[in-house]
Amino acid sequence: MSHKLELHPDRLFPIDPATRSLARELYAGIRHLPIVSPHGHTDPAWFAQNRHFGNAAELLLVPDHYVFRMLYSQGVPLEALGIGQADFDPREAWRLFASSYHFFRGTPSRMWLDWVFAEVFGLTVRLDVETANHYFDTITEALNTDAFRPRALFERFNIEIIATTESPLDSLAHHATIRHSGWPGRVITAYRPDPVVDPEFEGFRDNLGAFSDLTGQDCLSWPGYLAAHRQRRAFFAQMGATSTDHGHPTARTANLSPAEAEALFRKVSTGAFTPDEAELFRAQMLTEMAAMSIDDGLVMQIHPGSFRNHNARLFERFGRDKGADIPVRTDFVQAMKPLLDRFGNDNRLSLILFTLDESTYARELAPLAGHYPCLRLGPAWWFHDSPEGMRRFRRSTTETAGFYNTVGFNDDTRAFLSIPARHDVARRIDCGFLAELVMEHRIEDWEAAELARDLTYTLAKRAYRL
Image (cartoon, rainbow, N blue to C red; front, top):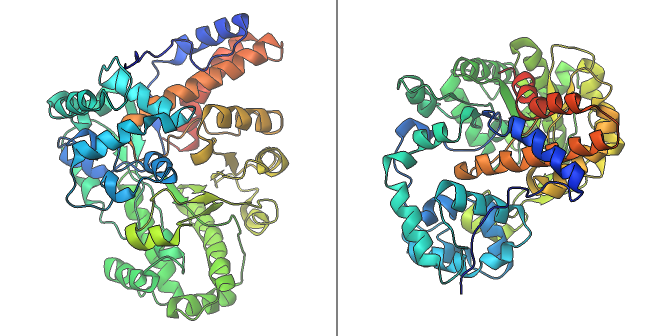
């Protein structure tokens, strides 16, 4: 027998009745604020073309590596879910997902999906094998109506602005289409140069050739390569970008002399480099990107500490972003020092640090951001974008860095319909944390109300220069 699907109004609030009551009051004051989504991976083609999404499996299952990584861990082949398959039965893939939905108990994916099912599609019974067809039909029928086109959902979700993430090799044609469509929704891009910055990125040398063709610069020469970055950054800024993003394996930075940097570039551009030289080049490029950010004003984000594509067989079969990225230990204090020695005291630079290594919150990140004017801390990210992860982040960083050296919340997702669900979780957790501080007489209730608004809305707009 299927069970009722119901979202409790006090979910994620503190257990203590008085603290819960205050959290509820704080949340009521900010729950309807617009969503600011300054960093994510939604597809700009959705908003440019405004086509129907298709069916339940194509929208909610196939693109979401949070979902299929859990199913894969339980022995479900990715092919059975439609991953990497041009021709598959979406209903059967959905039924397999529904029969496995109990694997998600206690996970943030379960919270996000249940929110989508209840709030977006109005479903009132829980997903399981018995309700699988009802879910598939209800969701798919809704997706074929105009009210569920991407732009309509963008407006329904009260999204004020959303930033996608593109390579320098992207033409940004979809962003141009959005701009000239007359639709008022604000969708901007962000500059993610990894394919032409990481010598170990697949096809790196070919990417440099494409970079040359696109910019008219000689990207096999160090001056031409840097000029190409400046040119593309300027173009991205013209298309609305206010930030860059760097997904390096580590947070290492370097400050080589111009001659040393040019000699290193000659090695990586010809393919004659060691892994240590590849890491040194990535490190140097973070410092080069910081210098360019001072010139052009783009906010810089670093997302280090992920061993990407850990499952070699899956990577060979399906490519990137298939749920096999694993957190690793990350150093910031020593790694960031070359960049900070050069730019750490320059107020023109705004650098947002993220981590998958929670052990660095109190020991390294909070003290760094609590001192250097250029540094801000990004929110709990990826594996830690969860109720407990958010609480750990606030408890570990607030006493040293405060709230105003953080940047609010980023949903950082490809799963468009989960965006309001993720923001709702963050708002509830922050209101609960603030309520605890009030009840402990560490801040006043009016300060908590101001902070709730700042953490929900103001800090993200300010940090990303929106």
